[in-house]
Amino acid sequence: MIRKTLLISLLFVVCLISGCYTNPITGRDELMLVSEQQDFEIGKRYAPEVETQMGGLVPSPVLQNVVDSVGQKVAGVSQRPDYDYHFAALDHESMNAFALPGGYIFITRGMLEKLESEAQLAAILAHETAHVVARDTAAAMSRDIGINVVLSAVTSEETSGTLLTVTDVTNQILGLGYSREDEKTADLAGLDYMVAAGYNPNAMVETMKMLKAENDSRPIEFFSTHPNPENRIAYVEEKILLNYFQPERLRTGKEDYTKYVLDELE
Picture 1 (cartoon, rainbow, N blue to C red):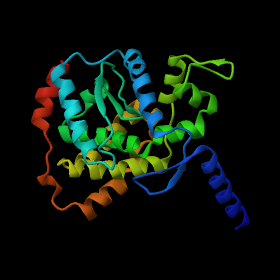
Picture 2: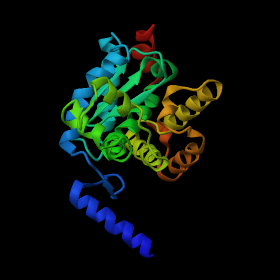
Picture 3: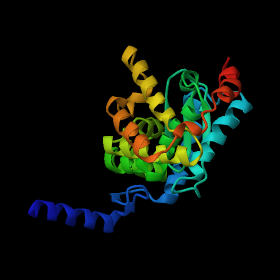
């Protein structure tokens, strides 16, 4: 009990000194060394480097419009619809999707080629949107990569005598992993987002099963920062069963996905 009291007191002191953030999804206070405004600055600064490292954007305005349109739909029903979201498809063969702070969300060609419907795309983008809303990347930066890198990300490239290039910081940000609790929160919040946006929530289960099958045959990049969905499928299926009546009535968008995404990738 004394130890718990000391930990709470320590967290309170740290929050006073460096700042805490109330997660709008969970309602819990979290340590945060990065302000919300700095989130936006980090995303804007490092998004071009991500695009460069990942082969640039897929050269199809039609496809990019679909990705952005679906992303904006799910983001628009999140707890933070006021963010300036940017959704883009990267011309990279890896199977991956990830988010930078401030609303910059990316999905790769390799991932798009494995999906089969607009609803499955919504599931991926909704999950990443939830990470943005919860500010999970900024929290992980505060927790895991050290004050030098955090300060380099939000100020200049040179901090405390250590030269950190944009590429260095970008690689460290992209390498951050989320906790299982963060992932569960993103799964369930993402489920709410995609349903509120009009998409069939069963597509999230389909996507998780596809990713698990792919990872069972060969390790895929998505699981370098996301845990394997084997234990996540159960709670997603349970929430669908208990909370969503006749989800099959909601949009799947398989034909449109084939026409405007898969055909564009050929």
